[in-house]
Length: 276
Image 1 (cartoon, one colour):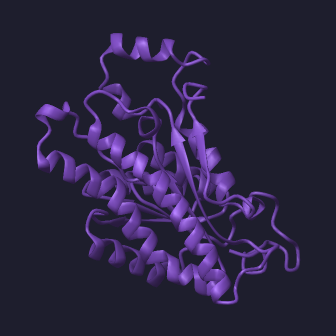
Image 2 (spheres, one colour):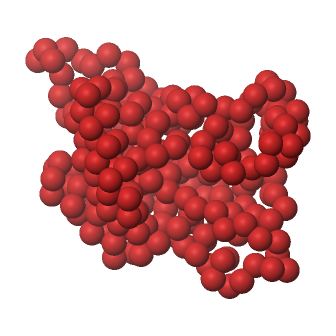
């Protein structure tokens, strides 16, 4: 992901700050909600976007058409992130099609809400498998190539629920909190592996791993919350409103740029001040 490797409109002219021209970004759960906003933002910054999705091909095709209309280069890739083999297959598919993966955004996530007393093993395991194990499997698949090239960006999408907890969401909270520890460990290991491989450049892009923890964002998931509950939640947010998906996407974009090469192992909150 170095400036030298990035494509530019004029030979010998460095890309503008924040440009992702010439980069390939794999965004899991990248065709709807926060994931779609991230895919859209990275695509408009010049990246080729590989948007992962689970089963809804019709929605994926419609989103690709939207990106194409915006002038972004994109592809869609079906797969279940909870399956390690499917994660590896998807990464290999993206590399075969686009040549590399410079950016991985682990955004795919699900909820199965029940109180602890009513939560089944399947409820617990399914959410942990998608939200936490999926991020591990995808990172495990892309890291070797990133280390070999000496550059890369991994951004894990967590949640304010991972920091605060929430009634009826023990599985979701545990999975999102787990991303904090996974992020910090991956960040340390990436730097260690770069150094061991002789690829750690103090002033280069290197391989960084960070986490973004959104608060309550206006998405389809939040639309299922009863209005009275939503009003109570909003009253607890200092900025007195829900967040927008593009506000999360801008932070992800910032962390993916070369200019953020000195930021790794960090958790970035985007929650209107709800968690301070």
